[in-house]
Length: 380
Image (tube, rainbow, N blue to C red; front, top):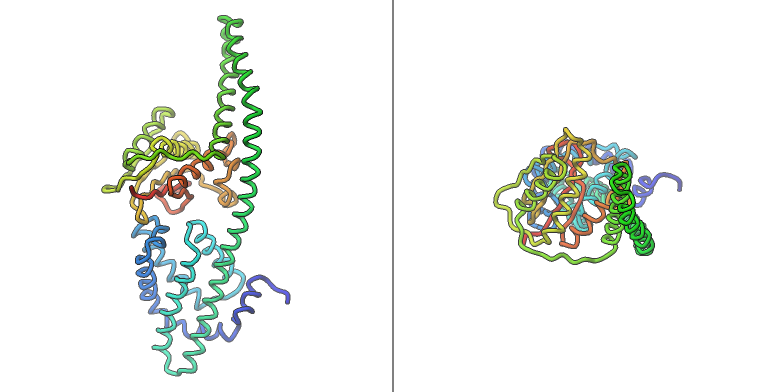
C-alpha cells in the first residue's frame, strides 16, 4: 500500500477515523484533569534518579516541562492526526535522544499516562460500551506515539553506527598521518633554528622565521590533539570543588585573552572526583569557543549548579548559537563552525568528560541566547 511512514504506523496499530472521533468526544471531559495527570507523571519521575538526571534545569525546568506535557495531552486528543502531528512528535522523540533519556523510560512514561487516562475515562463515562471504545482509542494512539518515539531511537542508532565507522577510519588515518608529519615538522623546526644564526639581526628575516616556528608549533598542537582523541589516557582524579574549577578556568581566559567571564556558582555543591588538569582544559576550550562566538564585546557565562544527583557546569554565550544542520555531528572530529577551526576541540572535550563518567551536551534555555554546553559530573 502506498502512503507515508505515519500512514503505515496508523494502519499497523488500527488507528483511524473512528478512533479520532472517540478522542475528540472525550477531550472536553478529560481536559480539566490534565494537570492532575501531569502531576502524577512527574511524581513518578522524581522516584527514578536516572530519569530525573536528564532534567538538568531543576524545579524551573520541571515546571516548563509540565506545561509542555499539558499541551502534548491537548494535541493528543484534538489532533489533527496528520503528517504535521507526526513531525511534531518525532521532534520530541529526537529531543529525548539528544538529552540521553534511556529508551525504556518511554515505555514507562506511556504506561503512566495510559493508566491515568483510562481510569479517568472509566469514571466519567456512564455507558460501559462507550467507555471501552474510548479506552481502546486512547490505547491505540498511545501505541502510535510509542512507535514514533522508538523510530527516532532507531534513527539515532543508525547514525551512531555511521559515526563509529567514521571514527574507526579516522583513528587509523590519524596514527599514520601523525607519524608521517612529525618528521618533516621536526626538520623544519631544526632548520629554522639554524637559520636564525644566518639571519643575524635582520628584523624582517627574524619575523618570518618566527612565523614559520609559530605555524610549526600550531601543526604540532593539531597532531597532538588528533592523537589524544584516538588514545586512551585515564584521568588522574582528585577531589575538586566546582567553584575552584570555574574560577580557575575563567582566570585563564582573562589572562590569555583579556575577556572577563561571568561566573555563577550555586552554594552547597558537592565536590567532584576529576583530573583537575584535564577538566581545566575542557572548560577552557568551551570558554574559548564561547568567546570566539560572542565577540570581544559579547557576554560569556560559566555557571555551576546541582542537577540530576550530580553537578552541571554550563558555558553559555550570547553569540549566534549552533545551526540545526550542525547539531547532530557537532562532537565529531573535524566538524567545526569556525572559519579557521580544525574541529577537534569539542570531540576531545567529550572524550575527556565521558572518561570521567560524565556527559557533555548542547542544551537550550539558558540565560544567554547563544550556544550553551553543559558538562555533567558525578559527585565525589
